[in-house]
Length: 237
Image (cartoon, rainbow, N blue to C red):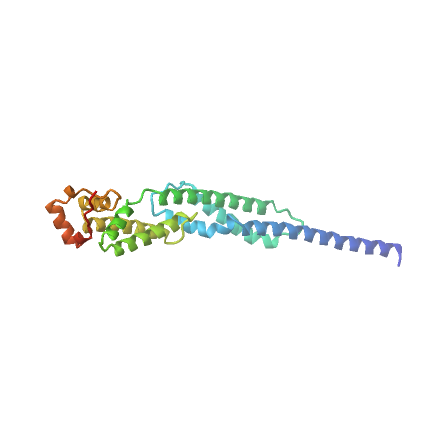
């Protein structure tokens, strides 16, 4: 082999080695971008957008420029998807990195807004239900199982919603339905027994009991209508 052909062969091997190095470097760069796109908050973007739609149904403050920023991020990511396959191995990826960084910033901002908004919404005061009264009525012989079952179901749904970082599809409706169920339970308890009789039932179940003077003819008649008069016992002290 002549010196010239040897030099040409060495140059060819160098070019191949250089190309292989560039391909390896570019593969690593693309892998890094892919991993960033595949992890939170970008991997949660679809769920965050669905959560934002939920929050738009309620009185939660949403920045005016959020939608505009989201449109711009989506536009740049579509542009990146078009440009990336045509890039040479030696071209820089500054545009791609900037696109991904911009999308990460937007997604994190969106997540912060959604998490804060949802937390404020689901932790607002709920209808007050006197569970002690419900138990006392049950212990006093009044059938409140339907009311208790409806309350426990609503309370369980609210507990699950409050333990979510972001709402899913239908979460706002589920929350509203649970709150309405609790309000309805309160009304039903009031229909079963008035507050005066309820207080007497609760006090009668304490260790001290309730004085006989509480049992006026009117109250006795109400207790008879409830069918629980025979559950009261006189205790001499």
